[in-house]
Image 1 (cartoon, rainbow, N blue to C red):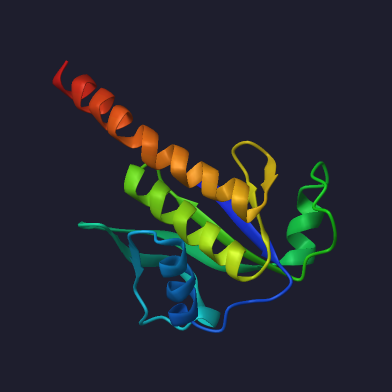
Image 2 (spheres, one colour; image 1 turned 90 degrees about the horizontal axis):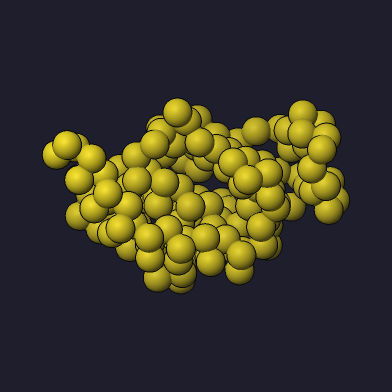
Length: 150
């Protein structure tokens, strides 16, 4: 099952290098592949999370159209840009997408729309989600390992 989140902002980062600087400022153990120009993002963006090769799908979406398609959500105002993230049920992709999205939202003074919960999150709230994911990950991985043994 694919999961999605979206960063809404009124400005954009100009390069993957700038995005990586924002990730580094958050002190996340994530390294984005920087061979793709940021304006050309459309599809899988490879990344490295600690010692694991991972990544997530990422693309720029038309903001006006996106907000119109989710009328039940109060986005606060008409944002100019949307950066969409999609990942499968892989735990490393989940972490990588949340770390990258949180850093992007913080660097652009944007917000994160968590599609799963239908919630708008400030960068501070998104940081809390990243912390919760990192805190819970060893327990979740242990449960998955146990299920695979059964």
